[in-house]
Image 1 (cartoon, rainbow over the protein chains, first blue to last red):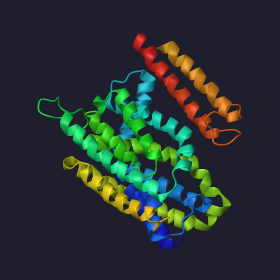
Image 2: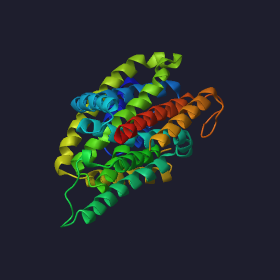
Image 3: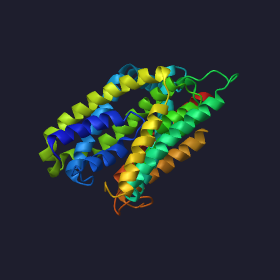
Image 4: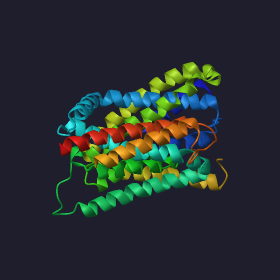
Length: 284
Length: 60
């Protein structure tokens, strides 16, 4: 992998981790399309990916720093007092409720699921499915939010069961091609959140998910094979972080007035093209 | 709810120890100790204790 390829992957990670288009799917399909020599099981590449995820997680913490300070202080105060009477504490425990199912699914299912689905054709197929899920979610929401329906909830109005369900939906992203943020935004919409709040809850949920996964993988950065890619990893982490910050800034504005359908079309078209190329053996 | 939280915390900590020492292999991809599984159950045990704290505060 050259320096330019590494930086391109960092930008790709920063964008696709938060856009509802599957970062994992894109890091399989784009190198296959461009015929980059990327060995996803190589310790050097794994160390590089850990650095990119760390950069993305730090960008999310920085973007939502005011929320995280409010959440952290609320969580501590709620444990001391044993009460959930402030919004920061409630939001914090909703995020904990949403993170538990993903953590359990990730620890128990990540290896078997990833081992089953490595080919570009399957990843492209899942990307198409990801697009269909977004269209289905938007359609179902329009039916549910018809005239006379109650006003949408804000995040703090979610039940813990709803938060856990939204968190569990993120586990679908263990299948490369399914987007974590796409699945959680769709599930949030189906639990009466606005697009705005569904996206915000998804990005807040992403921080512990990406952060914990990165922190647990930090030892990979210190294996001897990673020393040769230290500069690329450090610069890649910064590039992925800056790109992720820009992505979340864009998406939070985008979801004020827009919905998931453009991303659905993108997944259908890009996934369809990749599926045809994979089935005709143009890409591996 | 408080007794349930206590039982859950004990079960989680026991599972954490079992995974850490390699005594439990359920859902693991390779033989030996499973530190990631152990950390997960230790965190779940702590969360069960926090739940116990909330349950205790509500009943008093």
